[in-house]
Image (cartoon, rainbow, N blue to C red):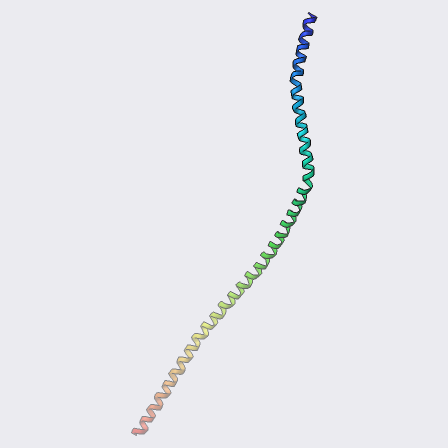
Length: 129
């Protein structure tokens, strides 16, 4: 009976070794690939980090320039708004003065017509009288 148990144990051990060997081989291949990958990452990582730092600096510079540009644009827009308001005020003044000027011109023309009519009437009275 011990011999049968020994044979069963031996067969189980052989089956276990037969199953473990391919697993160990696969684990060894995986470890080799992981080592290669880590080696490649270690060689490329400093370059990648340098590029990331440069990109970060570029983004910071661009955002600073954008902020400055927006500030300048705001100043420009305020100035344009002020110019528009001034033009509107000048237009209102000129429109008001234009109306006054036209009234004054009409008054002068009416006065000149009255003077002309008066002079004409006097001239006719002198001729007739």
